[in-house]
Image 1 (tube, rainbow, N blue to C red):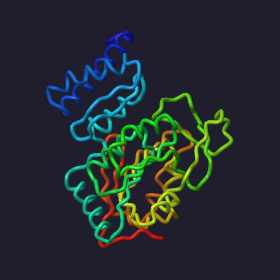
Image 2: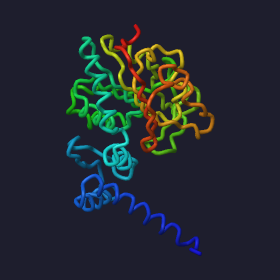
Image 3: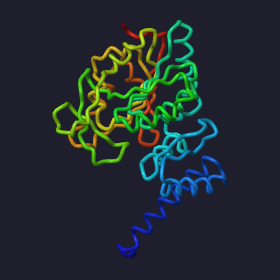
Length: 287
């Protein structure tokens, strides 16, 4: 029987092997020196540093933060990359909206440091990508990382059921796990404006929502209101549920209540659920 004192070492080796495997899948044998370089920068860099990806270019990360883990999920593991047939379906949606004289809109809710928005913008350059990030430091990093893409707009805000002001509910967690709640939770003045998805879309009157990505740390139920207007467009949904958070069960009730998604194709990708509704005719955003 393995002693308990050996478990931390075994866990560390398992994590390192997992990292190495992901880097090998990403860049082949060159992945090993890349992994070592990234880990050293993450541990010892004194200020923000850069890494690069063949498709996305130069990316800024902060040392000793969750940024490298976010990079591994979005870029190396490609959690928002779908099989070719589904990528083609999203591209077909974008082309159909463009043909109608409207602007295809991709909303990246919980944009963090902008990597998902960057990936969407590079993959679908004719779409408008709006990244929503409530944390000021993450927002600044997202602006830096997406500066080269004119089809990305980064907003400092949170997604909620209605327009309001939210407080930071837990500032003790890492930068990718901040939770916000209704104002009055004594967050030391750390507040942010909140928008509903409908009020966000209203800022872009010639746009039609084709993809909604949500990684908003337990606010899915508030954002995915079942009576919201945006459901009429039947957007593709990428969402990371957080039902295991205390008080955040049934987070996808609004999504599952929509008849347009009952016959959707559902894909599990890492921590995310991807829903591709079947579109049998051109759909135009309500309003």
